[in-house]
Length: 231
Image (cartoon, rainbow, N blue to C red):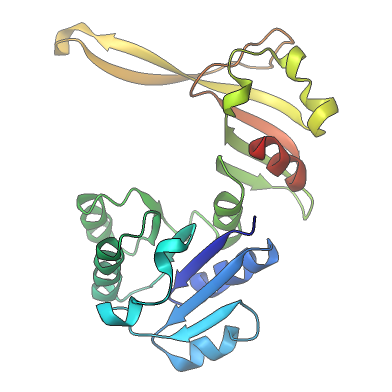
C-alpha cells in the first residue's frame, strides 16, 4: 500500500524531504504559504497547495488525518511552527513529526506531547524519508544508492526464534551485524523505580534468540530491509 505524507514548509529541508519521499514511491502533499516555493515542487510531488497553516481553516479538507504522517518542516518561523502543530493536534492528526528550530521550540513541543522531533543538521531529509517509509527503522547509514546499515525494531514474528531458525541471509538477503538489547534494572534507593539500559551483543551466534524490544542492526539493500519489516 502506498504511504501518504504531508510536508508543511518547503524550505531547503522540507523541499528535499518531499522529493526524497517521492523517490521512495510515497504520495506527498506539499504545503507552504509562499506561492513561489509551491511552484518549485508542483510538478514533482503528488499535490502542492499554497496555504497559511497558521489559519486552522486552511488545514481543513486536506485529508491530513488520513496521512501516515504530517511533517512540520517550517524553518525559522517559530510562531507558525507551533500554531501549525497545535492545529494539527486539534484536527486529530495521529502522527506529527516536527523540525526543531531552537531549544525553546523543542521544549514547547515536548510540552505539547510531540515526541518525533528532527534536527535537520543531524537528521538529513534522505534519512528521515527512509525512517518514514520503512516501518520500524530507527536509524540508518546509507553507504550508497543500494546498500545501508539500519537499526530496526525486531519484528513481532521474530520474538522467541533463533537467528538460525530465521535464516536472514537466505530468506531476506540480509546480514545481521549485531543486536542492541534493552535491559531492565531496578534502583532500590529510589523506591524500586525501574530504569532501562542497553547492551550490544557483539557478533550474533546462530543460537541468538530474539526478545521483545530488541533492536537489530542489519546490512543490505533497502528493498530487503523493507521486506524484513513488512513481514
